[in-house]
Length: 401
Image (cartoon, rainbow, N blue to C red; front, side, top):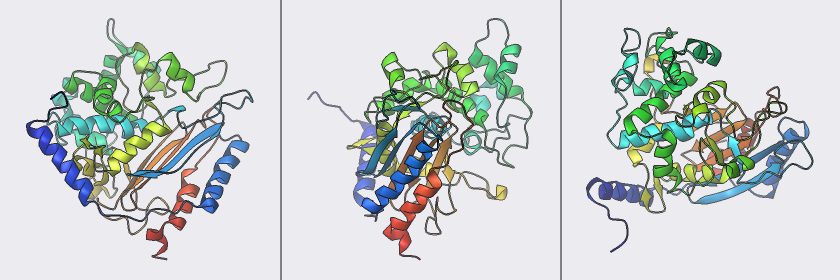
C-alpha cells in the first residue's frame, strides 16, 4: 500500500485529534448578514479613503470554513497599483510571533525536543550567566523573561566581531543586555524574547525555522504564499511597507529582523514572516479544530491548549497564553470567555496586521493592512470597531445583554 503509514505515537496523535474534533461542541457564530457586511465594509473603506492604509484584506471564519472575506483597496495609493486580493501577501510584523515562531516552538514541544520549563542556556550557552540562567522557554513565550523590549541594530553591528555572523552577534548582544526586572517577576512585551526563541527553535530542530514550518505546517495546510525568504513571484504579491526612495516590497520592515535576515538562513522570530489572508485562514481553522487539518494531526489538542492557557505567574497579575495575548476586556473578550476552552486570544503587528481567535464562539478574525506605507505615521485600529460589530451580531454574546 503506497499511502502514508502511521506508526506508534503518530497513530495515537491522530486518534487524539480525531476524537477532539468529533466531540467538539457545536457553537453559535456571528450572523454576517448584509447589514453587518455593509458596516464592516464602511469601516475599512473609510480607513482607505482617509489614507490610513492603501488596502486591506479581511477574513471572518470558523473551523469549518469562511463566513466572510474580502480584499479592499490597492497595494499602494497609485491608481494603477494592483488591487488587494485574499492572496496578497503582507509583512505580518509582530503577528509573526504568534503565527510562526510560537507554532514552531509548539511543534518542538510536541516532539519532546523542548519543554516549557527548559532553560534557554541549555540550547544557547551564552545565556549561562548569573542573571540569564533562570530564563526558560515559558518565560520567552509569555514575555516574562526580563529582557528589554528592543535593541538597536546599529549598535549590534558596531559590536560584531571579525568573522561573526549577524545572527550570532545579535544573540550575543541580547545575552549581554541587563534585565529590566528579575526573570518571572514582571511582564514586558519584548521582541528580543522571540528573537531568542526562534534561535532556540533552529538549534533544537537543526534547520531554519522556515524549513521546519514549511515541512510541518505550510505544506500540509497548503499555505502556498507564506514564508520568510520570498521568491520574486511572491515579492510581487506583497503589499509594500516603505515608499520611495527606500521602497520595500517583500522585504521585512522591522529593523532587527531586517538586520538578522539579510544573510538568508536564520529567521528573526519577532517579525519577518509574510503570509496571505487565505493562508492564515487555514492556520486559524487548524488551531480552532484543536490542531487537526483534513484528518491530519498538526498539533495535539493539549499542545493547542497552551495558546489559550495563561502562562504567566499569578503574582505578576497579567495573563498571556503561549505566544498570544489572552483577552479579558470587551470587545476583544467578554465575561463569558473564561477558561482555556472558552478563551479569546489575539496578536497585532506594527505594519497594521491583526489576528483574533475566539474559542467559545469558534470564530476567527484576520485583518491585514500596510498602514506603514509610504511611511509609518498613519494610526489605525480596525480590530476594535469590527469586533464590536461582531459581538453585537453573535447570538452567544447578545443573549447575555
